[in-house]
Length: 182
Image 1: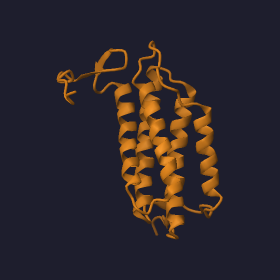
Image 2: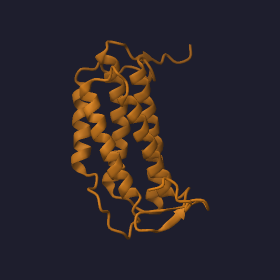
Image 3: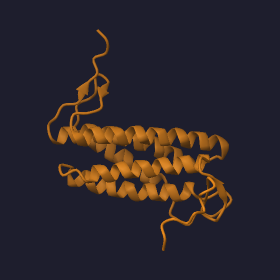
Image 4: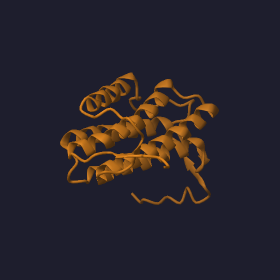
């Protein structure tokens, strides 16, 4: 199978089911940004100092992002052929956030991205996740999405923020406080 089809040479691409849409369609933007997020998770997974616990969680989330992308790539009038993200995935993110926060010092100030390379990459994942969420909100105004899609997106960026702090904590590196102008 060839990787190039030449079908997109005119600036259009196909959704599941064959519908043709411009490559800058709101759906394409949204699932494209989740693809970008999935790629940064792949980069985080290459980091040697990433704990096994975080590694297993990220691999699960990578699969969930494929599920989400499949739903977004399916026009509303078509049947989604994959398992949909639901309350179970949202609740698991919340449970894992709560678990990580149990060992973290409560925040008293804003923090800057950084500390360790892994934490900085998690902050990058958080910002990509927030951009993807903004794109979902735009798509939702044009074509209403399931509530669970928006909830999962919102929880996911919170998750990566806590993962950044947790990754620093695991190697005993302090978060970098933002002290503001003096």
